[in-house]
Length: 591
Image (tube, rainbow, N blue to C red; front, side, top):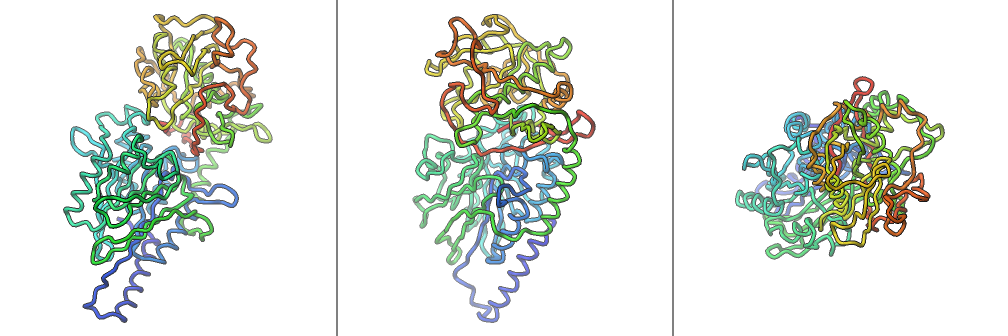
């Protein structure tokens, strides 16, 4: 395995400290107490550049912080709870996250859990290209294929005589978060049961310390809610056996630092998540006496104020220069901001109608309505596939990078045949299954299609009526509907859309179609009329529209859709690489 200057620095420092200790202590007197430090982060998502004012996080500053912590204690391991890559900003995504994997090698990441976004390009890409580039193992103890584990389940290393084992698991919801054709034959089992199984094996094999890396987490930062057994992560927190000494978590981009009493452990077990995008680093300070864990202290610390690592800074600068060349090319113009729905604090709201969601549906409908290109009659767009806003700026210019940031996954577009009843079922599925991390996900719909909804009605009866170009949708009738491949495989729990038949595709993906549309129709003014109409605002017998004043250009949540108000800090500035005009190489899904 290739070793970087950072690991060499830590090793040299450790050797010097050990030598000093040897002068003060007889060779036969081994220390009874050992201090080990484990540094961890989650959901880095290729955020190579620091964000904010002053800049927080970023690869170079994160590396500098790790340098500093290693200098304090050479008995240091560095770990990740997954989603290192995927849903990345243009600087990384344009090179298929190669710069991010190079960065992780440079900080000598010891081990990572696999996240759902590691499957964005499919299992073969993960176990082939990604594995070849990574100098660290990806763990997924609950990922099976053909009845056998599909990935490494654990990783064991020895630090100053202490045998440390890691178990990795990924959210059981992964099949609903990635393209089905990329994970054919894979099974995602109960993470708690698999983690306990592997942890028992590690302890039986002599591991002194076992840490769980779980790409699953809490939406809440409150420690009582983190352990709520009605949630998937709460079941992990409360169900993890005493063989597991600590838990690093991820997936939900929340930040918490909690401890819980566990029968059989002489200390409270820490459970951490560091937020996202490398803005904070988690630290476990583990004390072992005669090889037994006697105490663990845990904390999260902001990645700010540390001297950036110069080698990593050079890597980021090179990646940015290459991305700037591709991303700076003008595609077209917009006359006003086209944005996602927002909460009152300005954060993204996937539970409300947005100008951007409807605009993307319009684009996909227009690009597939012709006979021979699908014959679409309407299009639907999932909010999780929208990773950034289109902002007018000073001159209204829209570049490749701007469009790639909005639609980072370059999903194939598919036109399918659905019955009116199936379309209604899909709209009903906007209200997500009980226990889902997001109770409601609002689908963007193309112009000409509208519907009336009653959020207070019983499940399955919330869609009151639907119209297409002023004509009521016939439940028994058939309609050609364009959706991306993520939705076509039933992603985000829209199972009704996975039932579509007579699938056709133009061979284009959503990003190339967006580029083509902006090129052909600039300057663009997005339609702001609401297409999802609350039952209290609908004209009698109408499908929507009427005298509706429309959505604000900002896409604010003013439609009266169920007041979910989930706070998501995913900014997603992600992209695709254009080897030629209108051709990209990014693929996959949206979490």
